[in-house]
Amino acid sequence: MTERLHEALDRVTRVRGVRGVLLVGLDDGLVVADAVMEGVRANAVAALAASLVQRLARATATSGIGQPGFLHLEAERGALLTLAVRERLMLVTVAEPGVNVGLVRLELLRAGAEVR
Amino acid sequence: MADDIRSLTANLAHDPDSLAFLQLGEALRSAGRLDAAVRVVQTGLERHRGNADAHDLHARILVDAGNIAAAADAWGRALALAPRHVGALKGLAFLAFQEGDIDTALDRLETALSEDPSDPSVVQALQAVREEGARLEAEIRLRAGADIFAGFEGADHGLLLLNERGLVLGGALRDPADDDVAEEVAGYVAGAAREATRAARLLELGDWRSLVVEAADGHLHVSLPTPDTVLLVKRERAVPPGRVGLLARRAATAARVWVEAQR
Image 1 (tube, rainbow over the protein chains, first blue to last red):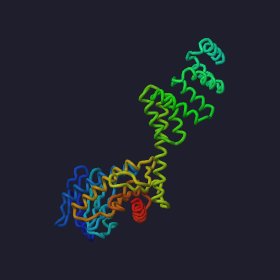
Image 2: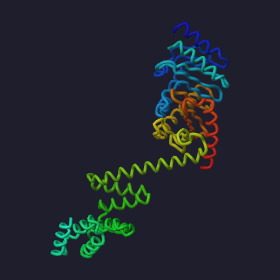
Image 3: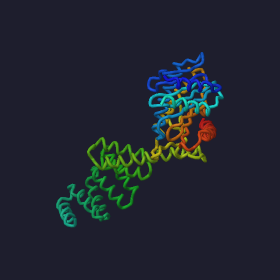
Image 4: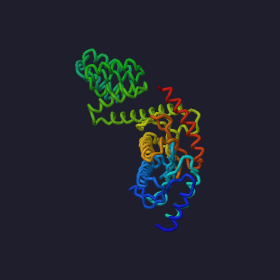
């Protein structure tokens, strides 16, 4: 992984409320790179996010709107956000509730540009 | 045709007890001479009361003459004599279809097909009735959806309520080609909702509230109006995600009201 990608991931983690960001293989749900806080189970986050995106991809394709780009799962005690960055790779973020989703999305897009 | 009728009339006159009345009745019917056809068949039935083909022919002549009730009785008599008589089954299926009773029409035609799988008229009729049944079902579903989401923008193509097992409860979902994709997408979305619940639980995020997906050509917004239902909102890419969220919240309220009313 390039230094610029590391820096981009770090920038995502600097958004208030972000607990970690990972680069994940969509097909296998394995972590390629990560910058996460202590207590964040990177492997579980990666596997669950990949599985969720795979399931939603069938719904979006059948609906005729193409493949998922950005995903936001909002829950009671936090959020899971993913962004497809390249064929079969995605960025995944775990965040606190009330995180600025727009800002996270922007930083994920910037980080994604380093992966391309 | 006239020569055939003359020849068949002569045959019947020569042997009044024969089944020649069936051919003559059919020829007269084809020629549009319905009164004569009825007389011939009724006379034949006096001698052959137990002939199911004769009752079938009688019924077809009656239908041509517009006497539907009498035709139904005649086909009923044919079936009483021969319960798997293909002509009578087709005839009664036709009458059921005319009355909008698709299930009975399908039942009759499927029995007819099992009796004679090579009859192309049964195959064609079965296909036509199935298509009509599917069309009516879609119409009913559309009306049900309109009831739940009455007045909502996109209620006829981008709002869907399903149960936790992926069965459509109401609403409608169409792809850009205007094909109905509600049932298929409902199955996938129910699976995704279960996966979201699993992910939220394992990552200790608590209950999830919404799942928003931005795709190349549109957005999906998934939420749980009640613990056992899933709401899907689909909108084109040009609609801002925040507006989709507002619409989803209003639709979820309407869905909760509807679900409560069903209980």
